[in-house]
Amino acid sequence: MVGRAEGKGTGAHRRRLTRDLVVRTAVEIADAGGLEALSMRALADRLGVVPMAIYKHVASKEELLDAMVDVVFSEVEVPGGVGWRRAMRERAISMRQALLRHPWAVGRMESATPGPANLRHHNDVLRCLREDAGFSFRMAVHAYSAMDSYIYGFALQEKTLPLESPEAAAEEAERRARETARVMVAETLAREFPYLVEVVAELGSGRYDYAAEFEWGLDLILDGIERRGKGDVGE
Amino acid sequence: MVGRAEGKGTGAHRRRLTRDLVVRTAVEIADAGGLEALSMRALADRLGVVPMAIYKHVASKEELLDAMVDVVFSEVEVPGGVGWRRAMRERAISMRQALLRHPWAVGRMESATPGPANLRHHNDVLRCLREDAGFSFRMAVHAYSAMDSYIYGFALQEKTLPLESPEAAAEEAERRARETARVMVAETLAREFPYLVEVVAELGSGRYDYAAEFEWGLDLILDGIERRGKGDVGE
DNA sequence: TCCCCGGGTGTACGGTGTACGCTGTGAGCC
DNA sequence: GGCTCACAGCGTACACCGTACACCCGGGGA
Image (cartoon, rainbow over all chains, first blue to last red):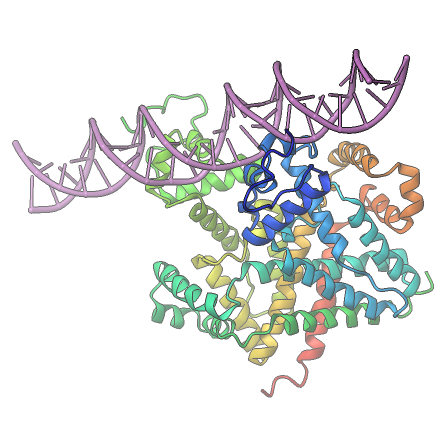
């Protein structure tokens, strides 16, 4: 009586559970409803299975999350044979897009227990910096640290600063207005924090282009790395 | 019978609850045991009070966390009158140190409901960029985005990549070795990801200096901002 | 002096991750 | 072809979480 629910209207579940299926379904749920929508019970429901069945394929929720992070890593590509700078640029943009698709992964990409795709990704990037760019070990580490910090930090801000889509912006603006009113009346706020209100207006206006902003900083960092990379090749 | 537990050995609690006391105690708990140690019950215990008493001073745990983030913001200073570049550099370092003291704040600094210290901080930084550096509005936004992304991203990696202290490194190295062995045998791993093992060796060796790494990238970014800032003053 | 109101209490509810023991079943072996 | 045995999925149970709600008592204003 394994697949007893096969006649269900949703037809969402499959014959037999697999670790892979579990992880992919978990990613779907988290993509749709965020991490707080991903409970073991909800996941089990979606799989047409009882919660504890999941634990036959995954040791704990923590391990499940690690596995989910690894599918995100598997989605970002490190191009080869296009020169280090272009490869790093495209890899950064690819990473940002993956994190945009899976915002729940943002704070969790660098866990203490990396999966295979994670290892592979880091190794590819390092190889690009050492071989294609010809950087020294130290220089490669510097470059990697700078790029990844920027990428993850940008993704974090983009995720957490919500005012993006127009419809959400309206509702959000109203909510935020009422919220911050608690802290200070609007006019007083404008008088006390003039520089700030200037930019939140810009952010809320919908004129703000996150992708362009990302690339501005990315190119700044790549410029700096390239400049510091000259004369480093010898080591 | 307000202070009924005043005779307790710990003597940790005070006469009367205050929102401020609640928030500060919550910060202490999170500093010591991480966010997962901060339950409303644990907080209440520490305050010598019943869990629901906290809700008389704080609407929800979410609001409590927001208030906690604001005390972190209140700890980082934006120096004035020292030139924009030095001010931004010291502010970044100050921010990193605050996040090192309060790692639980790392992913939560830019919430949708900023507190007064948060607003003040952002306004100060913006004023520095507009007035002291003389940047245009657009340029100031670019610079701010680049700096904050880098700072938060670095803090995130520093928090999440654990191998820092020597004693923790040993235990961690052993655990990680066993952990990644699940993924691939050690020698095979070295053969498959040669560039990677090179840097994890460095990271685990204790020779890696996070502060220096942070400042390397920070100066790279400040250089880039300064360079791009020339000829921008006109707008 | 009385009243009121706000901070602290107690209980309870629905939700979470997961430990443990059971059972039915399909694959592998004689 | 029949037997067996590991193992996937089940059911129950537990400890803990955030928090809604009703109560209650003591100190300050009228």
